[in-house]
Amino acid sequence: NAGVTQTPKFQVLKTGQSMTLQCAQDMNHNSMYWYRQDPGMGLRLIYYSASEGTTDKGEVPNGYNVSRLNKREFSLRLESAAPSQTSVYFCASSFLTGSYNEQFFGPGTRLTVL
Amino acid sequence: QQPVQSPQAVILREGEDAVINCSSSKALYSVHWYRQKHGEAPVFLMILLKGGEQKGHEKISASFNEKKQQSSLYLTASQLSYSGTYFCGTAITGTASKLTFGTGTRLQVTL
Image 1: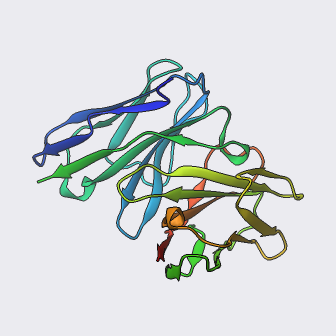
Image 2: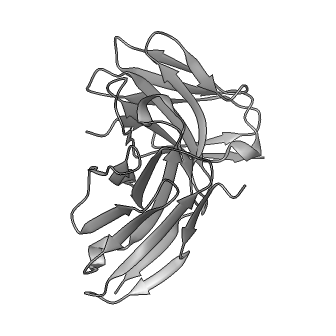
């Protein structure tokens, strides 16, 4: 039982390059989330998927797209990376949606955009 | 709007107590607490729901004042393992799909 896994763990991009961050969970959770964490800013929600087949914007969606590929997988895509997207990205999942359920976080992806 | 946490940072000696506060300008349905150790992912501690129900860690206590939209996390007889950054996350309705997290309180426990 691996919980929430994320790939890659580290990534360096040049401005304008694109990439996809992968996230998978094996807990049969319905809801999945993408956060970014910057120093002094806490965790900010980028996008979330309350259930398979649905996605919604969070607080900071600009510059990102997501795909809920199936119940297990939720990917985050940066189409044209910018230095402002340098951050640590966490994927999380919960059995049901946010207000009543604990979230399980993946180990994070540390992204640097030069 | 992000909830406001206080203090921003605190240093304790092992065995001392600490209180971390989380305040919101909006009426809240639930408050969630997470702890994050350096270089690691956040880990769930507990949920406090409107109406008094709590779910989570047996050794950590917290309160939720619905009228003041405030929650406090109580860390008693602190241990070195309590060190980390504590985040509160808030939901404004029972059907809310997402949490809004505060900026965190950094706690350091020393010998």
